[in-house]
Image (cartoon, rainbow, N blue to C red; front, side, top):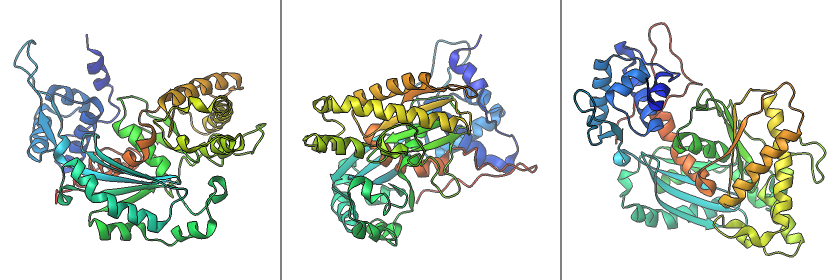
Length: 413
């Protein structure tokens, strides 16, 4: 009989190869599995990957020598020699994630295991390039000091921001002229002048999805939809166990999805966005300031909050039904920049609304909550380089008859 973990390891959908030409693919696979399971012994890694015990031993030794893995205490009490599990070394790499949001900037330092070591935030009515540079310039040193890191210990900076930030300005009350400055602004160039490390930029909804996949609880869901309810709703798509950004890096831009029979607009963004809730609160004479603090008590917004949650749930249910008609997703994950109790209520209401719809021809998915809330976008930005350099991307995998290769694991420095 196999334990639950052993049975899941035997069913790992990706297998390694004992050909020497794909050593780095096998290293990625081992790191991917250890990140997924938390820790693995050599015997467990052998079962999961299909590699020979000797090949796994060589990989473990190489990754441990490089400092990417550390040993746990040996497991005793079993037949034979004690086995020693290995886990990710949190101090192996450190990354900065920067979220450029419509209502706030958020910057984090994340270690190799996905723990947020330090965080800085600033709120605004709308973002400008100058404000973003000012935020990073003023907060970078305090951020690193809080994380107890020098600048030369940062291995990369990644940015999560809405695609075409200069659009959709009417939806959150921003001046078009000032927002147009983003159109030709070189974000990477400006940031590199402040911190000369590799810099990447990704859609903020996809970044939040990446955080859930990379650092969220271990799951065997291979295909799921991810919604993030922010100032404007967005999200991402996971296919074959990997984030699928699409040709232009904008897959999961769910805002324009058409929603039938809902007063107030024909798009998902017209209903399931915090900007909509903000407008409702202002119209009713409420101060919407607490809305921009996910840790605040939103119960003071009742009964408008409940009315908006119902409206958002109906719209999300229609959006889910539409996406299921395109790809047979097995699950839906919903997160957002709101308190955990609001997320729980929204997930429950979406499930109820889905059951009211005619889903003939599609399979109802599991609907569940995300796990990171407002920090998901900055956390996901930091996850980008971990995902690209140390994990398996099955949507970009090219393995030919000669064994194929994955990109080399990058050296430190």
